[in-house]
Image (cartoon, rainbow, N blue to C red; front, side, top):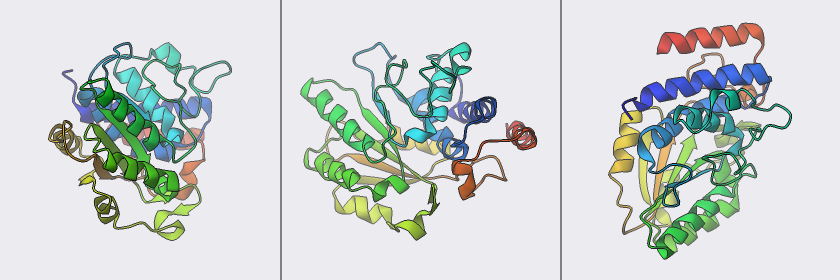
Length: 267
């Protein structure tokens, strides 16, 4: 596209801050932690346009980070600035969780633990249709508390869905606490590896490494793939980083100004 994933990630973060302030809506920290993951997927990695039946499929399993997805769709040219400005307004399709009528959103999500099953189904469908399209899913590490995730993990490994790529946003926290205190699943690499997945541990804010890792995956044969992407909750805004309260809190005027100043200084 000519625009780097790193710069797209920065643009996504700014949109998250601007739109969350305008709509007075939370889930900001969760959206910031996946900004670079979505920048890589929508900016430089996934193939096809929303109306292309052979496009790569995407599932945002952690649906509460929908604002980052809308921002990524905007940066990819699939969502206008005017539409983006309707986020969380009455009658808008752009709600706090993604809905499939929005161009570029393949699956409605929000109930945690369901997205990997959807992505596995999409990967199996591609194989049955002899399509080379891939299926990507972004999960939260807290979502791995759900048993349905591990059912999908077993299903995908059994069927050797090599065209399935799961990316786990390992930010270490969830709505009511840190993951190590709620249900500690570390080491995650060992757990996925025990089920027969191809496992890669990466820095979730290093866009070049993310691009290179995904490009190197064998999506034609072998096991499904998982990237354990270590991220920072609230990335780029110091008073949000690793703070549980920013799972829900909206911004006030002074916090918004501070966040904008920090994000612009980092560009």
